[in-house]
Length: 473
Image (cartoon, rainbow, N blue to C red; front, side, top):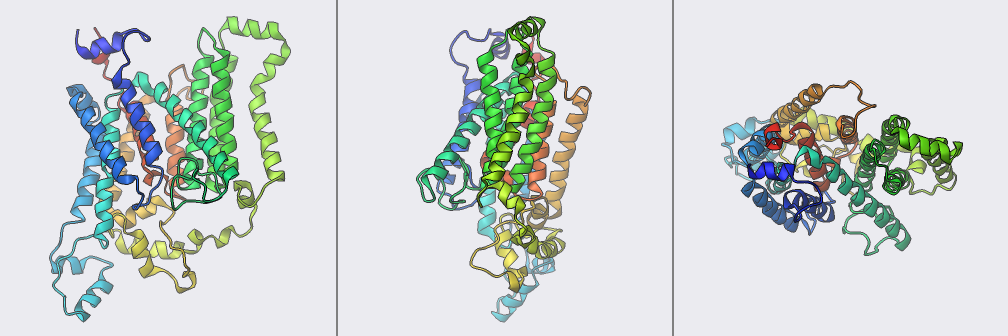
């Protein structure tokens, strides 16, 4: 019997703790504690990247051949991205560099300074692109660490993410109570006065809370399908789902509010069939307890509706509901700056302006009427910014990733997607991917290391399950 077979067939609850299962969860927790921001000057980034390399080394030392085989497709995608970032840092001959679109202003400046023959890389801001290259240590480590997990570990990862979301939500409440500038805020540049939790940006916190709603609902569905029911665990998951949904209303993110509503609807759609299809013994006990127990399943939407009405009635300027009601949405800088962003995409779509270069390059295209003390740090549409900074090669890499995931989802099938069996994670993974993809159209959640790691772990566990040979004696 092989070492991998021994691990897979060992009864749960016996023997010493399995580091193969617990180390990835420790890595996940560490990334959420240190990687909640997307800025390149966050003090915790060197620690995050250094520890990520250590976790990657731990993963590599224990990976078997079948582990490498199952993650070869996502590994090739991430390595191709890493390679393209590195290529953008290679100095090019002046004749080649001058021919790249969007370099005319710099070429004119070089000629005025008498330096027309400088060798330059594709990236217009090489220091930012170097930071992007170093940042790849975190997603690569996440992929390697996830390679040590099996499909049976999906529930444990979701449990960890729900716990992290609850802690982040409670931390957000503490931030509101203690006020701006409180030590409860983990990042120097953040949304002061908002519930950012473990993040620097309230939008990213809200999207994460919406994802946690789906995770909590999935775990509750699985608990309802057990033959031996545990009401306390079920109550805990239900409370976590309601808390996370409430957070999406309070955080102050318009996108997060929509994501929270969608996540709650998906979660409730999963729970309802599981509640009605509970084991017969449980249904008989509920009937004996009285007809009131039959209506418990309708409590969450009623409670959420009551909270929504209360928050709407008492809404202050910081809540997402008040921001939706604000008639000045059209004056949002991201809307006003969109023509400039489009012009950037039309200019740099071939080779890109360089990863991490958007804030600096945007100043070339910025309209005079939009000049202000603050700066426009991202396009607030990551699909477009990917084309601006990474060009056509990056777009092809993203397309390859989408095809890889799409084929895996098609193989898994879409029949009985809502009325799934216990341990069926198709709908939750598809829902989370959809939420992140939609949020990326108006923001940049996947530039945050913690959300990167969350997405990679979920995708690897869903698309690259443990080979059947690892579970056979």
